[in-house]
Image (cartoon, rainbow, N blue to C red; front, top):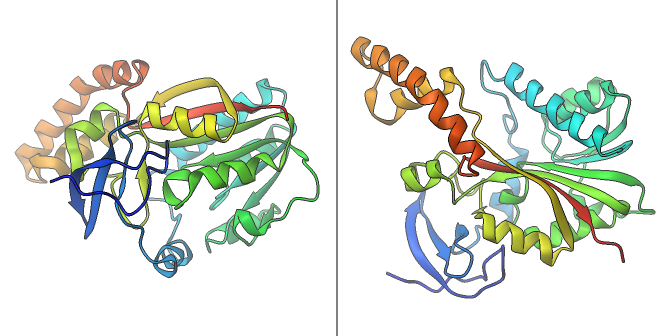
Length: 286
């Protein structure tokens, strides 16, 4: 089965794709040029918007606060090493990254319409309650624009990246993360890969596809890593969820497998084959 998608590949713009699988009523296809995975037909705009405006959107799962804050701290340190002083985060949610940036002495603002952004606003952060395209820049005034787990949500990621460039000073940085469709977890799990969740996620980018997308928006990557966020506890829960169940023997076996899997997962990430990409790119000078 090889349907022609109703839209071009959101990564490289190619018009041909092959059938991958169906999930939650959405046909997913793979671009024949760059191998990016995406929904063949976009959901109605009001359905997409309703997803992001739901009361529990961006809510943090129990036990994940510490991991998310550690991740935010590490990302903020990278931007400080690049010499960034003013940062804009698109899709800031409850504000873990905003807190991390501010605590390093940098200035930071957020953009998010999700209701959970109220938590960041309550801690004194400047949050623009709009979509990025509605935030008309009066000057290119930021050293970096961050988009953590954002571009997989939008119908036109190229347009979003081009819009982000308007906010950057010459030579400014784009920092982003996004799920990988070319890593081992995505390949092994297929439609069961947790990042396959339409209409929340509309595209999962391959390395080749994300490279093409960044080039089309005139960004040059300077740091590119792969990560999975899979510590021992996350691995244990994953083994139970995908086959072992919650029986006493299943829990015991899951714990043992989680210990054994830690090193292979670390090697997988180092090889660039993890669950997601984290990329820092410099905007081309006009």
